[in-house]
Image 1: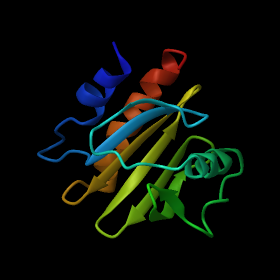
Image 2: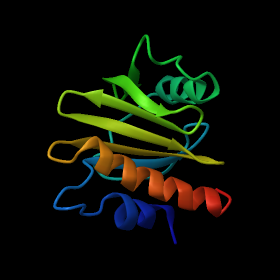
Image 3: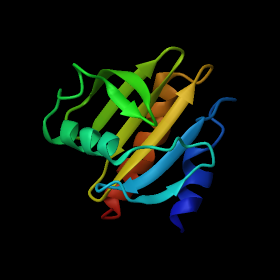
Length: 131
């Protein structure tokens, strides 16, 4: 399966009538593996800050998580594995695997929980496959 098909068939799917607004899979170095058409243009330093938070949980809490210039307030996650952020009626979920970051961005009516299930399920699968 291609990386793009993971975006199209696993992340940008219908969940109880809702779906992510955008998604991406990238390497830990920020190199893009695949993305939805709507994924924001991000900066390398934004990905570097996300990776730092996986190594030093809580480092993003004071400043927020930035992605494509949008600022997300960091909310509960799983140290070293998942970062979740909230921005208005939407948010972001970032799952770290052995080799990749799975990023899902959502807006209402999708819920934070629905976003987390979609992103983390694929992340767990890729971890099991060695990615």
